Length: 415
Image (cartoon, rainbow, N blue to C red; front, top):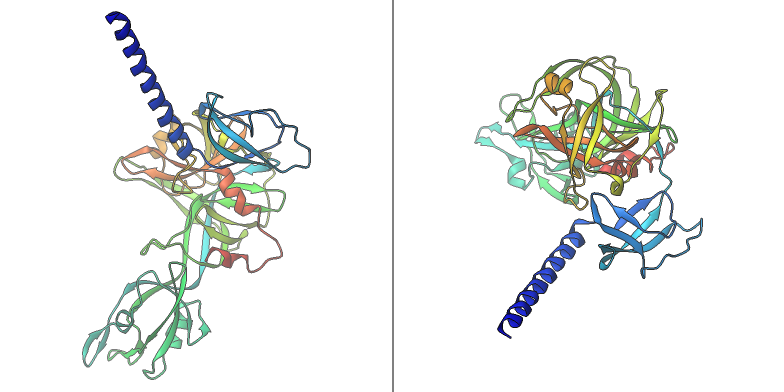
């Protein structure tokens, strides 16, 4: 009898532990997996979620459901081991677009929509050093878009607008997405006699990145895989207008752990090869004057990405991209960052010998797996330059596919 009780107790404890483990698994997958997925077709049939083979998406209710050809969405349920429900999801039917993978370097020239305050300065007056802007409540990172209700976009326009014999002026400012109004009285500098606010500003930027893809359906492109931010404030640059220009990579500063390297290049021409219309968290997007004649391949959806071998296309010399081997180590569906969806590792010996790993300027290099564009390189790990983050290609495509050739104001959407 005692032996039977002991066996019963062991079985009881084992069942409790199994229930706890099952509960923890369900809770993990509920948080780790998104509520929305894209598929090329809705067949009403189940599909697995990479890289979690124990999770299967089944039609709502668990039974196969007939789906018409015109139906665009379907409700499904994520099931653990095909038995235990995790949560309901929405699956949207999307025809996978055919994109031309790039990997070529490009130069970007951008003018900001407004003037960014990058630091405080001082005005030398008979009463000492003053900063009227700081005293008025203006903050580093603020974007000045109007002076006395008149739009400004350059530092010169701002300088001219404050030359009003020391009169109080009204500044319209964008701060963390909100519009506020400040009043400030410029002070006259005794060094040059000009009235000043006591700030440093920026109204443009230029740099080098990597193009991810071209879309033949609307002549658009996507690149970088992350936003262009102000180097001083770290804030996303509000785009007024921008240009894409050809670039040649001349040399590489090899990266080492603790000190990422960079691609060094030069603009091949001052003539634009395309327009940049959007600067977003997921990259820069615009229209190209000319598309390459390379073959296009389908876009890959996030649930199709597998842990394992893949490749990137990037340029570390000249203007011609090459393919290099990598490993996708991790897929994070519900990352708090829209650009840190994958962890990748460079495994190609040739690329490692040239760059040490991922270097600045490689952001945007397309990630290709199983013949599909699944993402782009975005960041390098400072303490392990062979590894870094990648963004899902579908996150980038949502922006480029929405571009309208006739909309001249689309660049303002990123502000």
